[in-house]
Every structure is written in structure tokens, then in C-alpha cells.
Length: 391
Ligand code: LMR
Image (cartoon, rainbow, N blue to C red; front, side, top):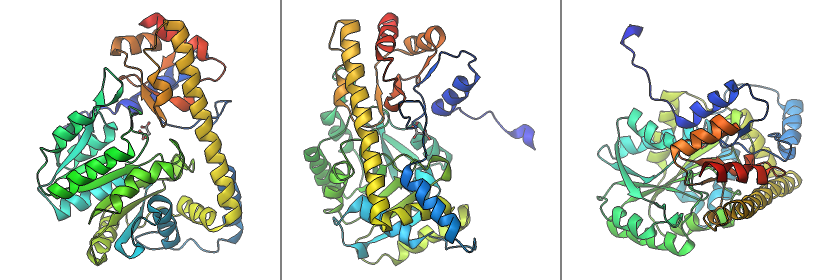
């Protein structure tokens, strides 16, 4: 039966990983997939993670199943980290999922169960896997304007105009912070305006929250989303520990629902979706996170290390913006310093992106999204020269 299979569309980020790995040049630069790298180019296991893992190895006495919804201490810790005290804990139910992507997938399926006719509106552009998963599930997709190519900021008027076209019961997918791929984010005031619209039109907000702590800080990055959570009757959140705990391959994420009243039905739906899709979620990374969050010393150390990562990305942003100002003799790329999170888009054509790859060994996603953490602190001038040369 395999002859019936059709070639599958390639994910542009995954494609980039393969191309980079296959490039034999020693002088090459990976600005593709969103993985944090330190100044030496390594993606370290965070200190608190190492310590908790060592403790877990010593103390774990069984590998028996935990539960369909995962480790309740982890889910609870994530609720606190993500939502703070913006919502009464009794209104929130959550399920541990394999990574942020697993959480997104389960939430989409929950939407399908609860509102089979709902259209899920994603930003244009958005993380490519949002659209891919929705298509895979056969769900209806809407797109709202988001990025203004001219200002490299958010096209908020266009966004609101498009969101106004949504029907009651539709879902709006928002990036909680650090918009991927653009790095341009809505302000706290604009979160308020989107919340007004969500309430007026009876729309379900869904938040993809994969980069908490990578923008303006752990609490600051959650402010907009929490301001919305405090006002809406229902809300869905997919949060990831891949980036802020560096647990990429361990697949640690959580799907949360803020409910109007009783959480029983939503909780049951999450449990049943987990059972049908993979049964019990992977435990290791989630338990490591739960241990860190329950131990004041480990938690403080994790926060300090995360803050160091955030600050170093900000320094790389301003360093690249400075170098590009010098090399291009223009302020065209100043936005790089103003954006937040792991990514920005340079606004290059796909030919220019190809040229950077072919002639200079510099890899970024085809839409000119680059990973800020991959920028070489001591090679920003050379990079800016190469970018200027392909313009
Ligand atoms: C990215 O956007 O590069 C990350 O979220 C990794 C991924 O899975 O695409």
C-alpha cells in the first residue's frame, strides 16, 4: 500500500537543519532552527536541570506510569509560571504534553471536539507548523495580517480589521511573547484591545507560549497574556519548556484551559486525547521542571541562568543592528535591536537568503528569519558585511 503515499510538504525549518548538516564547509553559520547557543556555540544543559537530573537519578525508585495528564506538580508549577495569579487556580485545568508542539496539537484537537466548525485564525506569518498541523487535522484556517514589512513592526490596524471578520466561536491563535518568526510583538495596551474584541465577538483565544523569559523577562513576557486571562471566560494556552529550560529533546510542554466554571469536561477531554494519541506523556523532563520549581535554590539558579541567556541575546541584537548600520550606511536594520525574542526577519528576498547560504555558508530560514542566539558575538561585523554584500 505504500505506493499510495504522496511526497509530503517539507517544513522549511526542518529542511534547513538537514541542509546545514550536509554542508561540508567548516566556516558555516547556523542561524536556522530556534535553539539557544552560548558564546562558544554550545547548547548547554542548564545548571539547575543537571542538578535536578542527578537528584532524580539518585531518588527515582520506579518507572511505572504516572497518569494520563502527567505529573500534577509539573502542571501546577507551569500554571503558576505562566498565569501567575491572574486567574483563580480552580478555573484552570492542564495536561502535560510532549513539548509545546504536542500541546498545540492536543489543543487543536480539543477545539475540534468542542467546536467542529470553528476556524482557527493564525497570524500571517506564523510558525509554519501551526498551519501544517491544522491542515493535517483538516481544520479550517483563517489568517490575520500581523507584520508590516515597511516598518518591521506589527500592523495592528490590519490585524484588528482582520480579527473583526472572525465569526462567533472561532479561535484566534496569538503568540504570547517573542513572535515567531518576526520578533515584533503587540504592546500591553494592544493586548487589551484584542481582549475587548475577543469578548465582544465571543471568540476563543489560544496562546502559543514557547519563549517565556526570552523577551523582556519571565514576568514581563506573560503580562499581556495574563491581562487577557484575567478578563475572558475561556482561554487555551500551549506552553513549552524546550527553550526556557533548554529541554528540547526531552519534550516538555503543557496544554492549559481556563474554564468559565467547572473544569471537569475539559479535563476529561485532555485525558482522553492523551490516551488516544500517545497514552501517558513522557515524564523525565517534566519531573525535572517540577523539582526545580519546588526547590528555591534550584529555581533561583534557573532564573539567573535564563536571565543571562536573555541579556546575551539582547546584546547580540544591538551588536548586529550597530554593525548593519555601519556596513549598510542606513538605519534599515535598526528594528533588529527593538524586536524581542529568539527571532527577527531581516526582510531579504529568498534569492538573497540563498546567496548568503551558497556564497558565505550563512544559513537562515527562506523568509530571512534568523536565530538571534546563533549570532557570533565576535563575528558580527563579518556577518553584517556579508548581508550588506547581498543586498
Ligand atoms: C523554531 O521555530 O525554530 C523552533 O520552534 C523549533 C521548531 O520546532 O521549529
